[in-house]
Amino acid sequence: MARNLDPKCRQCRREGEKLFLKGEKCFTDKCAIERRAYAPGQHGQRSGQRMSGYGVQLREKQKIRRLYGVLERQFRKVYAEADRRRGQTGENLLQLLEGRLDAVAYRMGFGVSRAESRQIVRHNGVLVNGQRVNIPSYNVRPGDVIEVTEAVRGTLRVKAALEAAESRGFPEWIEVDVKAGKGVFKAYPQRSELPATLNEGLVVELYSR
Image (cartoon, rainbow, N blue to C red; front, side):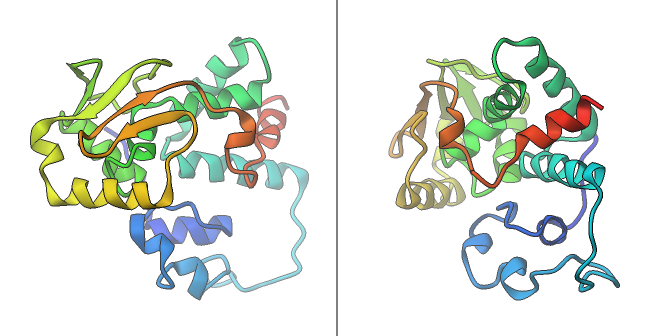
């Protein structure tokens, strides 16, 4: 299975904003963006460089892809599905990404990061409607019940992740029972409920070229 092995903090610095790839570290002053808010590499501190329209579109696509931990080929498949569906392609794209099982597990606090949530899914630690599912890209549907197995729920790491997520608050489109390690995916999120820093319109423009 292909994976992106680039250093997490380097990815955030390249995109110029927090992508929350390192879990709790991202919420502290140890975050790389807090310490070095410029792109990595020898020429990272250069300023005043103008980017072409294509460059701006490409960077936005890369940012969204890295945020959700999706590789290029997977991202293209999700975009193709978003384009086939009714409604706005950009909003469909973000909803499909948020509907992935690893993303839902992360939003429910089963892991401190999307990478950790994906690992829990891969290791047979998540049930969907009572059935074990170990495919991170599995499409969760509104009304599905997602929970961690009893063995996983008892680990200190998952307990800490659930408590941290509860303290920050859960999104409106999910409902979570922290003590039971279980949640319901109520609906796909509306665009207004997702980060305003994402500009999915640029991705649509990029793939429409």
